[in-house]
Length: 279
Image (tube, rainbow, N blue to C red):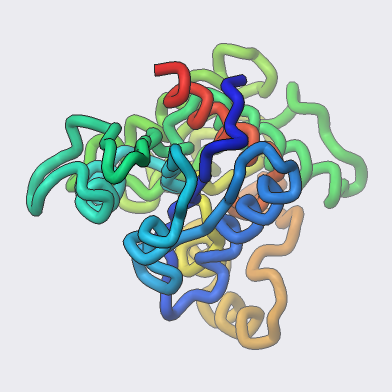
């Protein structure tokens, strides 16, 4: 790997003023990479909360700055909003150049972590861990499990669907699980269709989201058939909104947490920097 002791790394998350969990993965991985001493400086920045990206960039003195977006897809935020904040494109434009020199500094804008092929390792780690931590009565082997990758899906951004389908395809090609499928919140096949699609008795559902929040804590459990009242009550009590595993529609279902807290995501971040440094 290129010597990065003269470089700064900025991890960019969406952030939220309403969801305290939104910023957690960005802060976690910034702290972990800071401890490793690979970079002169590691900072976290956000779009919806402080510290904001533009403010963070303005305080960095390193000769090179690598900016890595902790986002799943190449869409509005990663192709327009973040590049605009970095001065790489204008309003309403999509990023075309990912490098910029200013005042003796080189600014390098990396691609989002979610589209990297090693995200399959992150997804697999999440699937494996949730079954091992909640065996009932014992953990079934992957050859007896139908793995579902749950994405948002939206007609406004075709990349949202493609990223999830590509991850499912890569995992399927490795022949680790009996079945592997992509399902969606807002497109077909829906998350609730997993009971009809799966031939296996055991189902593991992994949400393809960086942060836990409304979608992972509320929407997906309800789409899997959990009553809304039960989900709301558990949230108020600070309890998990899905019990692992849950028996439903003749299937045994494990539901994992979002990907952001998975330690392997740190390696994907470094891969994005390596690619950009090599270019």
